[in-house]
Image 1 (cartoon, rainbow over the protein chains, first blue to last red):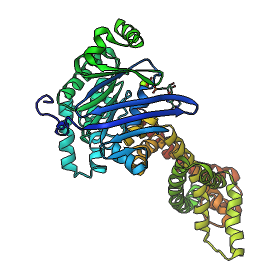
Image 2: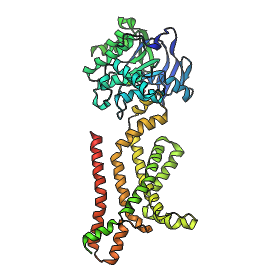
Image 3: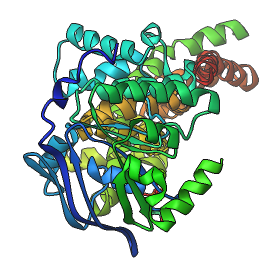
Image 4: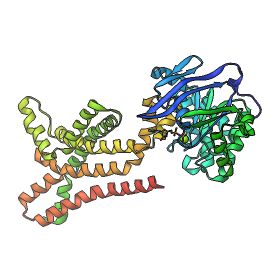
Length: 258
Length: 211
Ligand SMILES: Nc1ncnc2c1ncn2[C@@H]1O[C@H](COP(=O)(O)OP(=O)(O)O)[C@@H](O)[C@H]1O
Ligand SMILES: [Mg+2]
């Protein structure tokens, strides 16, 4: 399934997909992101971790334009985010987003959740949209629920549908914001398995998560945030082998003890 | 005149009652949708204007509006038929109430719904039409049924502008037969017969939405 063919858009490993320069964001007077620099290369698998409130969600949401920012630059290959709404929409189309709370559309079937943007944004004919959607639903191992409504699915199943929905648009970068932290423990694995399989296809991904097992297995780069700053940015090996920044090590200790 | 005959006499006004209700919906539904959505989406001065228009229709006394539109507008050279005036006034009054249900329904949706739509690259309009409105309208279905019942009941006022609805028929019959108990009980029953099935439909809808 997922592991067979490389993702069509993952080929060019040399080009950075997204470049973030000196990103700063305030919510009112609160300085939430401070001088963030981050390059997301094609094919990168970046895990972002850090204590609650450190700005991880805000960073992810800035990358796909769900939040505006006050200073700095986010560059997507050709377009730059934050200049105007058309540019933002264009950049946004290159990213797929998976939310902590799934955010499926409850009034639509699983299939319709997946075909909605194919039909209304990419203007695909119904047949083709359904074929694409079924392909991705199969990849997340839930094709049999295509005609079900989100409320009829477990949390793990809903999150897998949400992943399929985001993949349908063939994004350059997949963004995950704590995709498993709203799930019961027994459902975490089925979602992580899908994400691991996805990583093997070569999709570029940035994932906020505290699942350190997943990070160790999948990430090639770990970004540790604290109080709005990137405190540590290291290869997965470096990060876990104890060379991490003291604050990162403290964080790791608390997370791993749970 | 037997109670049954009185009832039949009153039901002769049912056509007018139904007509005002149906015609009233032609005003109420678009008003509720357009103004409910506008209040949800706009800010600042525009929102203030939208709210003012909604409040005018919602908060004015229906009887006074009927008189103003039927008796005062002709003086200014605008003559509308009694049916149009009734449908307009009752419809926009009901639409004013329903617009608040539309707005509340939209506001009560979790922000994640809009964000998921944005993340998929959908335009604001597409998010409104394909994601937000369908959910808000389903959730507010029972409230809309209540608004519809209000509209039916409010049609009892249109006899004030000469329409021969059920209430008007009751008053006509009362002029020839002095039997207020039988006549007005029959009128009460007539409205109940019209409104109760709507209320039942509303309850059925509510049960379906909850499941
Ligand atoms: N919409 C918002 N309005 C105001 N403050 C916010 C908002 N969203 C997040 N914050 C604040 O920004 C900081 C970072 O939040 P967030 O990015 O959600 O952190 P994390 O995802 O790492 O837990 C927190 O202090 C939080 O209270
Ligand atoms: Mg968060």
